[in-house]
Image 1 (cartoon, one colour):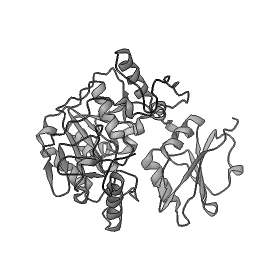
Image 2 (spheres, one colour):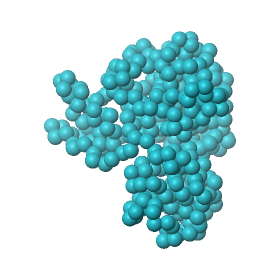
Image 3 (tube, one colour):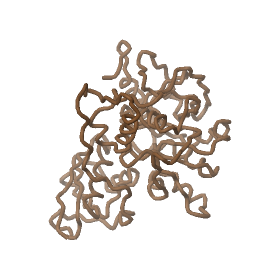
Image 4 (spheres, one colour):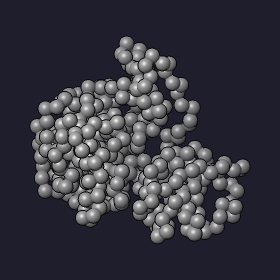
Length: 375
């Protein structure tokens, strides 16, 4: 449970900012911004001011989170010929991807490389033994204070990514951390809400300001295994690898709610490293039901609870943004659902994971895997 300071909690601050950004039309695609690192109008402009920071000018390797409001920073890093590292979504298939634009890439190609789709199409995974040394970390935030205290969307991935980088020697105490936010996201955060694993920031970039926080609060010094759940360990293979390393080195790697219990067995679920090339785009749209689809399709994902006002183009845009583009989409508007067809069960399973929590309008969509078909 998150800490509280009187009637204030991290979640109440998140909700206040999300609501404000939506009600004042500050939010930008993807919307609504609730339960996300919110994109905002002016995020590209805010990100461009990073070029004026000495900590950016002198860097070689930059780690930038995959959030939409950081797209401009990713582009600037590529245009500046820096090594760009982007964490894999929810750390499912590793810690980093290294973005490698094609030879002679034009500005338009670099723009594509900086998008979430480009991160998947123009990257290679970076292993734990790659001797990565990150010079600058750029993270998204829901809220941040001028003192450098940060609140994310509540899932803890940015904090965990940083702790994992510490564990593998990729960052050190002096590695600067930058965040890009709208001015309305810079708020007072009670110190009582901060926890030992929370990542702080050294610079805040907004559309109107560059704030050097001078934050003296120590950053995480490694993975706090007592905060890691068995479920999280099962879902994140690279975390299991780091735990084994630290265990062999004699560290206490006891997990949350696991006093003296046996280490959980590794997950046997196969998670593909890359999305098949055949999923690169939609191939038309059918309004028929599942029974009318071609039998060679190997696996499907069913999205339910679509809003009455939902449109196909809105769903397609969301799928492209999340990197879950199917081979074909069957729209079943009257039933408030859509069927996504993928090349095999592994691709469908990966897509289902990416789509968890997807919202259209005010509705959170239900996500379920279909049955595999005979080829």
